[in-house]
Length: 293
Image 1 (cartoon, rainbow, N blue to C red):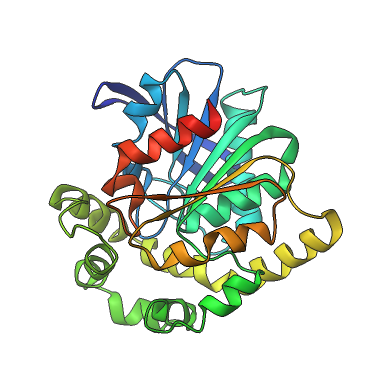
Image 2: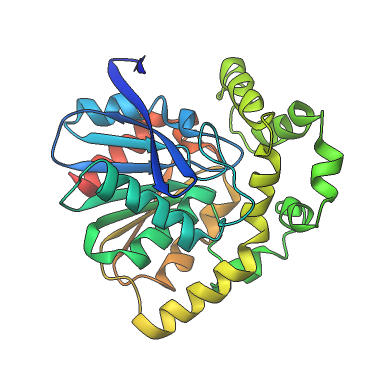
């Protein structure tokens, strides 16, 4: 299917990255330089709708997947550790789309954790890494952040067996809209159409459970991240760590990435809280271009 996001034309498709697991994805632009955009929770690839046209205009090819469990992708019962999810996206790029060179990986929220796992697992294919707006399991900053129960109350709730599925069934919009409202600099920035898009996506069979499984995998993610760091040392590719200027993550994102990467540049995005790609796409793309182009 072909769709326009602003001035960019997105070609949508679905790739079987392993038996029974399909990843829905869009591709825009024709450049040999590729940027992989990995969305967060509770969103889909649609979160990048304001970013993609700007990156394409800058002369980049952009790949925007719905990661495992989200949007039009498969929602299996397992495989939500970020190491496995990074493998899905690597297979999409190199086995299905036929990439041969390196890629700049950009991740927001949970997508930041997947992007980090991609860079850790496939360093030779990761030219640069851009991450924003999430704590990284296995770091000291993550352990400290878990103590902020006002900000991260949902981490424990989502990990409880069965309970979040039971309590949110039929109430997806009521539950999800709280995130979009509470974590925004401008509560209207995401927009009613996008909220409706996300609510519809997470009302599909298995979608809410898949979202909760992202959080249930955090102990395994933390164990792997600590083991990888101990075995292989810090990441060596350039890393751009970003946060919304109004976000609670702004205070510790730089130090957190310095725990796991050697070459870290930090910046904040003005007029943004948590939903950086939707609240200030122009400033985000300017930061990415200055870093990667």
